Amino acid sequence: MTDIASPAIAPRRGRWRLKVDPLFLAAPGILFLILFLVFPTAQVLSLSLIDKVTGAFTLAAFARIWNGGPYLSVLSTTFSVALWTA
Image (cartoon, rainbow, N blue to C red):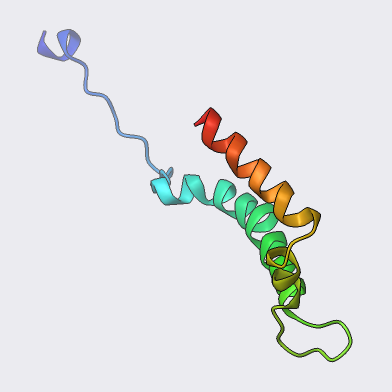
């Protein structure tokens, strides 16, 4: 009678379960961010730091921003709006 009341459940054989690590689940998102955020940002930054003609390291693009002109006023407006809305 005990065999009928509590049947033994045979374990499944031949199947293995893949243990999924949380980092493994995050890998597609991390790969997406690297591919579409980090890589293009590094590319643009490297283009701004290297002179087109000589290929030497230069900060001339950033000096143009800080020496005045429309770049500085646009940056100040951008940061003031950001501070107002923060």
